[in-house]
Amino acid sequence: MSQDQLNRYFSEWTEREAVAEAMIPIIGRLYRKNNVVTSIYGRALINQSVINIIKAHRFVRQIEAEELNVHDTYPILETLDRLNLGQAHIDVGKLASQYAEVRNEQSVEEFLREAVAPVVDCFEDEKKAAQERETKDIVLYGFGRIGRYLARILVEKAGGGNNLRLRAIVVRKGGAPNDLEKRASLLRRDSVHGSFRGTITVDEENEAIIANGNYIQVIYSDGPDKVDYTRYGIDNAIVIDNTGIWRDDKELGLHLESKGVSRVMLTAPGKGNVKNIVPGINNHLIEKDDKILSAASCTTNAITPVLKAVNDRFGILDGHMETVHAYTNDQNLIDNYHKGERRGRSAPLNMVLTETGAAKAVAKALPELEGKLTGNAIRVPTPNVSMAILNLNLEKAANRDELNEFLREVALHSDLQKQIDYVSSPEVVSSDFVGSRHAGVVDGQATIANGHRAVLYVWYDNEAGYSAQVIRVVSEMAGMSFPIFPERGTAADH
Image (cartoon, rainbow, N blue to C red):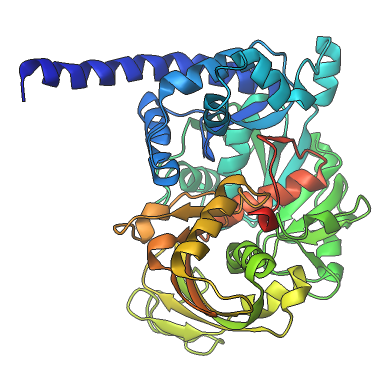
């Protein structure tokens, strides 16, 4: 290879870096000024580095056969910045691909004024903008694996100046003299998800954690009905109970007896009359009068969107789901007594066969599949990221390519695009999905389909993906669900 060719590769790379670098202030301005969340084919651009922005463009080759060019997306971002937009989630990558088809007929601004018309020139004055961007107080009751990841998402999303605002966490006194610092340290460093993206300081005197400028009160309590949140300036709050201790409406209703609480969200399958909500599936069931809701389980969230899509298109006669699940804090580190069958055996040393309620829970969100699914789970020695294997009998025959193409399209362009992701690589393994905010990721390379029989493999980060789903439910409870552009079709359309 000649020196000129070598120089050309490097020159192209540095030019791409320069364009990506120019994108960063625009992305930040759209987010903080207008609360517009931008992405590239579902990959968020907020607070990303130059390299990560380039990688997001590169990722598109797995979906659209070729890499997306930063020179195509930059004009989209630059023009959006001038349109005085209202709150929205905008996929600039998909818009760039759509514009490529009409660039000879329309200017970028003409195209975008049509593509995102409902949110163009939304705010005529700053007062109206401020009213639209009121915050909603959020309290995390419990601060375990899910609680801490929820805290990361809430702090991350607070940068736009609206949305949900994490005001407090409620825990029991741990007993150590430096309890507060220990809790802050667990948020600061995580063995699975890495370091917290930002800065964390501790206010020992006032018992608070300050994360990226968010003042988070730490409240010590031994019961959900024993806190007066108004003492801390917290009112009309949504409490996210991530302890898993209280599961039915009577138990969770104790939260509502505390001053300053208006609603309760459970991060586990709800019992009794508690609605189990899976975003993208049955969030239309959320009503203004609902005081208590559940976000079901991580596995239910991972498989239900895929099952709905397949059922809508091909029909599901029956099937079996097997979950290969990361071990959880409920299991023992070494062999010891446990009230659950087999769960007393060492989690890091064994595969542990156990039961799962996910197959039955699917029917609560998707009644048309009631009685059609069975399920089991195998806990395996890995701390995060799980897989669901869906063995299905279909009403309509399908081959592997047909099924994969359908699921790829659903992941890209349907109303389930935030729930379902799709990957087609022969080299991916579980650690590649750490941090995925999708409920589940279909592994196209593993798909088996032959006539009326199909086997689908769905990866899911049982912490990050599930936490993202929880936040989507809470956003709807708070009335803070924003329009998504380009506008989506339904799974059945694809």
